[in-house]
Every structure is written in structure tokens, then in C-alpha cells.
Amino acid sequence: METPKIKTWKGTTTVGILAKDGVVLAADRRASEGFFVANKMVRKILYITDNIGITTAGSVADLQFLYYVLKNLYHYNYISGNRPTTVKALATYLANTLSQNKYFPYLVQILIGGYDTQPRLYNLDYFGDMTEEKYVATGSGSPVAMGVLEDEYREDLTADQAMDIAARAVLSAIKRDSYTGTGVIVSKITKTGHVEKEVYLRKGAVNAS
Image 1 (cartoon, rainbow, N blue to C red):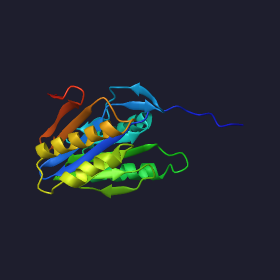
Image 2 (cartoon, helix red, strand yellow; image 1 turned 120 degrees about the vertical axis):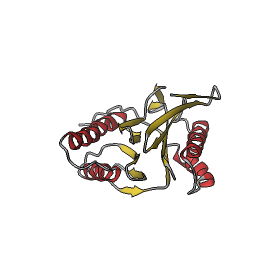
Image 3 (cartoon, rainbow, N blue to C red; image 1 turned 90 degrees about the horizontal axis):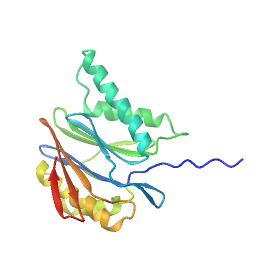
Image 4 (cartoon, rainbow, N blue to C red; image 1 turned 120 degrees about the horizontal axis):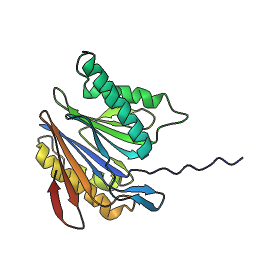
């Protein structure tokens, strides 16, 4: 019997940059289903708290499930009076969850970035491999985006400078990768919370939110 094919919406290009005063996450807004553009305004950056964000390339449905698992874990620890849940603790829990499903994996490549006692950025693949990064790009447009990051990253970047670099990296992927499109959401996460802006290539304008 032929195995039925399940259609999934997929994310495409995400970027993370560690700055001296925060972490920047960026992602395009297109969800694709094969060569079909399933949605032009998908949100690929979600917040577990004001100071911790998550983004993905891969299956949108799998990300949504894992996001709520992490969010519930964080808030359970908070209301039960346990010590504050760190970015690394959440990343480690997620890595363990992903590694336990190798035969039926969650089809995601996830970035977790945030600020607890300092800025932190982690990259996880769908097998549960976890690495701490200074800058990283994932998804189908990552080869193009990584070229921008390699050329422009410095360890003394401010979060505002990193936002501009992250936006340019994803916009470069939009120009060259057919699965990446519409525009970019860029998020700056610091010890005081997060701030977003949106960049749309076709308009050449930036809107803060």
C-alpha cells in the first residue's frame, strides 16, 4: 500500500545574531507547500516570554506544537515557584524532546534566543542536535543569508546594528530563494524585553511595531 502524502506548510529562512547587549532573530513571512505559496504573512517568530523568542524553518504545525510545550513549561515553573527557566534550559529540554522522536521527527530547524543573565542563542535541528551560536541562518535561503552574516558579523555589534544585518541577510535570501518571500520580521531581544520591526523589499520601507 502506498504511504499517503501529507501536505505541510513550511518555513524558509531564519537568522539569529548574538549582539553585546541582546539577541536578534529574523525570519521571512512566506509559507510554502511545494512550489505553491500557501500563505504570504506567516509569523515565524514567537515569544515564550518578553525576553525569550523562538523561530523556525520547516513545518509550521510542528513549530506551533513545540512552542506551546515550551511556553507551558516556562509558565509552569514560574507559577510553581521554581527558579527562573533559562534560555539554555529551554533549549536543552527541546533538544531532548526532538531526540526522542527520530523515527517520526518534528520537521523543524529551530533557533532559540533570549536574555537571562546575558544574551544567548541556540540552534537545534530536528534530530535534537544543539549548538550555541554567535550567528546562524537556517532554511532554504540560509546559504545566501549566511554569506551576509559571514561578511558583516562582529563581536562588538549592538543589537540595533545586528537588526540591520539580520534584515539584509533575509532580504538577500528573498531575492535569490523562491521559497523565501514577502518581507522580514526582525526582533531585538534584550534584558528589558523585545522590539520588532518589519521590512518589505517591494516597498523599501521599515515599519516598527
